[in-house]
Length: 167
Image (cartoon, rainbow, N blue to C red; front, top):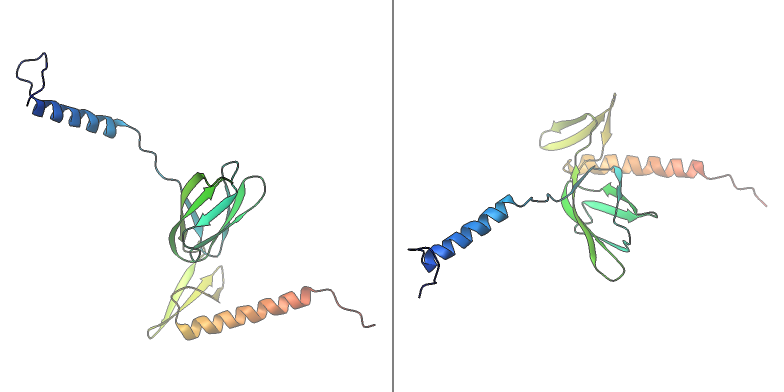
């Protein structure tokens, strides 16, 4: 079966090939919109605007990032773990308003890794080197550093409370 074209020698196979080529040219020539990538550093927060009418936010992997919806179309993105995930904003009817990629990267300060055999310890050197909790550190070092940070934060919270007066 062949199509009838005004040009001599133009068969249906040629027509299909020409249509595919035209579609390819249109596809290649069309501007490709790159997905918006939101970068945040681990243990840091970043403000980001969301579309008007955003009612619900979904995070693909909440161990990588956390998002908190604030007033005025602003969200706070907090880097929780290294890696990439996505963020979806929905309106009250469930219509998708945005789908953005979130990438959590390492800290911007001067980080030094020290190895004790196979155990790794991470130090934050800004300007003096102090231990920090970092994913991938040896379990013993990680737990010890985390316990010290937790104890220090509890003492700071306790001292910030107003004194109680006995009755």
